[in-house]
Length: 367
Image (cartoon, rainbow, N blue to C red; front, top):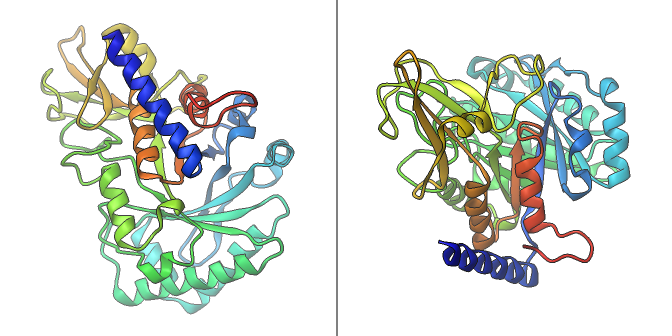
């Protein structure tokens, strides 16, 4: 076993060395959530390429419906990223199909959103915008065409600013909307691929949240294949990596058991009480109690247990083991990097693990 681990470590080190020699090592981005306002204080900001403020919500009228404290409540953060030379982007979100249709069938609403987005990007501490518009429902051709025209125009406006601002988009998997085509993505600077939520709280069976490969609709390999088919160069592809997991009440101890109740979101590490009321379970406590199992197909980790009341539970998450395998994949495919969601859900442990491997400090080599 020890010999096998040593061989793997040498193999990974060789891959990273080759990647550094022939291309850039994978970069690290992270989503910074307004509901964890101090998570940036313990993070290695100087090693992150980009920080994405999450989130600024837009509505069907093209207005900013919620700024979540931006920019006034985050003055210290803005100063810190500026000192460290980290790009700070704003993530614009819209998840409601009806609002999306209203927005992009109205020329006035679309114009208003363009003006609002351009104004947000013009802030002196903002390096760019990300569009996280996730519409998991059919979109009318007219609405889709108008959205694509919006992306084209927004890209022109951002690139015309001085200094130029970047534009990135989140590319969903398993959606029926087909929001993006090759010409639209060609004007985007970065594309963040959906690498998580293959299973979610409402899944009918327990399973991996961020599988590398497998039969699921959402896998890393399928996300890369989709982006490649849309003409996105690998140097522009980033894959989302969850610092959260899910736990379900299930029918038995068999892996991927059918669920019998809605699941709950888990964090990798404990979160201070009161900060995220929706997350009451952390993976590390579960693993200490019940152990964990690595799934070689999905390259994800899971646990299961029988509670004192006789109920069965199954949880899936990402850990150091799964992160290593997904880092190997980033290196092998020469993708641009990884995007952690959400900064602070791991108490910096997984993010630091990735940075130690791929972003050596002065005088060090990649592990």
